[in-house]
Length: 128
Image 1: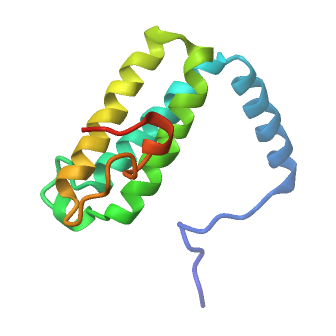
Image 2: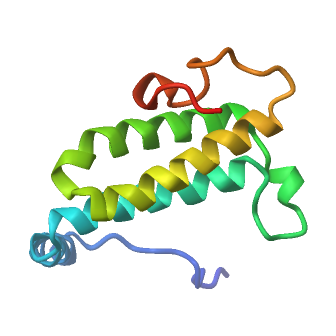
């Protein structure tokens, strides 16, 4: 005889519609600037982990420069595109964080990229 698995989830379509409607109402109340900066911070955090900059003991095991490059490039595109919309008050700290990640990538990379060819540099210009 089997017992119910406490980790299982039974999909109930009736609840899904109410949850989605509530989420839509919740997100509609969030200013665009907050959504943009939150997304940028998530990209920064993920890139830092992929650069091996996490505070955990296993930070070196988490390092993946290929993944870090993708995250930094996405962050650079977001920050560059959003800067005129969010203003220098918010874009400045994001640019500083992006630059720090780009420099950390250069330090971690065994084969350095040519100037202007590093992650996100097609959006930000060469970082040195």
